[in-house]
Amino acid sequence: MIDEIAIIGTEDEIRSRIQADADGGVHTHIIAPMAATAEDLERTYNAFTAANFQFD
Image (cartoon, rainbow, N blue to C red):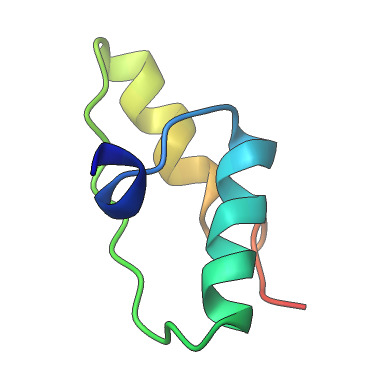
């Protein structure tokens, strides 16, 4: 069930899964990181800015 509602992994793994979901028809994605540190939280937000992530 967790794999159906959460994406856990590296930035590349997460981007790939979001892209696959979008290709399958999911049009709304919510990025809500559960990071252990402020640095991890910031890294996650930065990974999904328009400059760093766009759908193919």
